[in-house]
Image (spheres, rainbow over the protein chains, first blue to last red):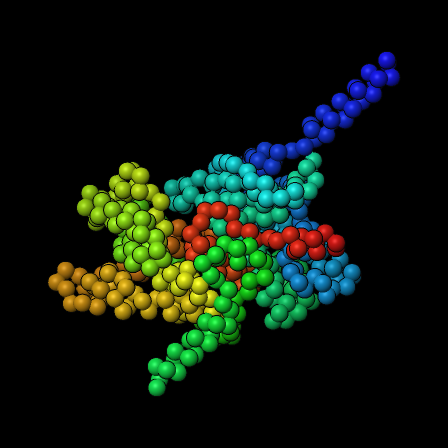
Length: 194
Length: 260
């Protein structure tokens, strides 16, 4: 009897444990937006804001996924060493570029709305960047990687139907096609170090 | 003879990348769409020229425009949007959206009269608030004509061969605003009204996107390629006329990434 109760309790524990760890993608986006907004509201320098945003980005963005998506088909022809070199530089570039883009907003008001599960791997969360005195309302869709439901990650932001990941992919593709992968890595390094 | 050669060249270039069809959404979900940049060297040269024009003329104007009181800017933006309905209407009809053409006609009549030449937007308050502009390039896209090569037009900016070809429709009678200002000699309007409205449209667009454009330039390692991607993605979305999320990833892409 005791054994049975123990067994049931253990199973119930596991079920609740699993459920409690699962994070709803909309809540994840809302929480991320709130954290970023709290930083952007602070009366600190742009550089300090960028540093704080970089720390958040490392936790909530699938940087590796974006890095290799951005390379497109060129990733297939790279050696392991080259991939490692590329990813190391990309991460620095991405964090700087991402935080710099966000740091232009002083107090963005984002209203998170519905979510749509595309498949087991992705969920799209819709939101609206509310209009200000000078800028119109902007529709933002967040592509969330939900392969690991305990740790959802942002892999793309789609602004009014324009995917930023895709813009980056086409930008990188243009450099690799016109020059080569080393030139791309050099450009990323220059950007990260400037 | 010259006309025949022109038609042959345009047909060839348009057929270089012919992917769009009436089921554009399906095509858009594919990740391997690539619009040929057949004239990249020239395009990049024109792009640099346009950036200079933008820095010297449009951006200062847009900065000045942004200093105007908000109601003035909203009124200007509304009036320009109202004028654009004149080009949208024939395209609604050509795309088979007759109901939408009816709604847009009503919107135009209400805003031009009650809204005092479109400065105010009372139509939105009576439920006619879902307006999306259309042009002949979009209509050609809906008819299944591919983008053709990507081109950068002096001053006008990014385009494709299809969209540039489509804009010929504006000048051969398809745009009522062009007809009453430039094409026909009317007592009420002059060429200036047409070109001023077009220039103002550019300034209004830049003013609304000033921070975003500067930010994009600052954070791009190839600004030309970024603008090209933005333009092409935006046009594809406008052609399928949807607020639905367009697939920008496909599973095979992700599978490959997972095996890294």
